[in-house]
Amino acid sequence: MIKNRESAARSRERKQAYTVELESLVTQLEEEKARLLREEAELHKERFTQLMENLIPVEEKRKPPRRVLRRVHSMQW
Image (cartoon, rainbow, N blue to C red; front, side):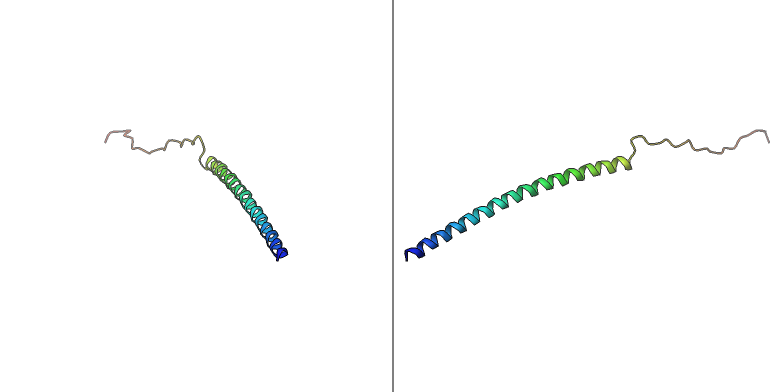
């Protein structure tokens, strides 16, 4: 009976240690996930900025003035 109690106590200790180890791993993975999400957001922001710079030039080229033909009265009728 004493050996059974000691065995049960060791089993509970192993289970507790395993639970603590898993909780530690969960915390570590959550921190890594948050870091990776921040990096992804930063890269997405940089890529968007580069795309916008390529799509919209800073200085727009001026269009040449449109030539319009007009009737000129060169002589009287």
